[in-house]
Image (cartoon, rainbow, N blue to C red; front, side, top):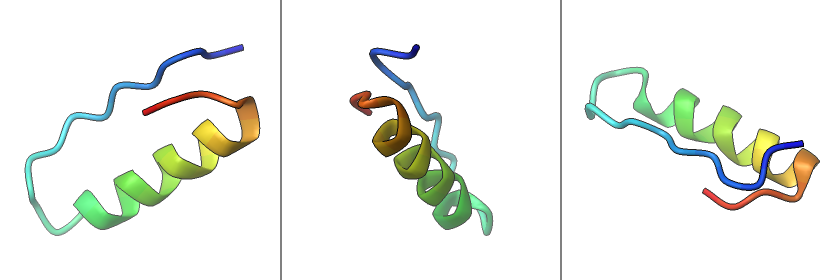
Length: 33
């Protein structure tokens, strides 16, 4: 479904959770970040 996922980072308190969700999506769809 998704070949590449782009994740914007702002180094806020939510960055770790955003990256974790992006990694899970990439793993699920066989995508790259």
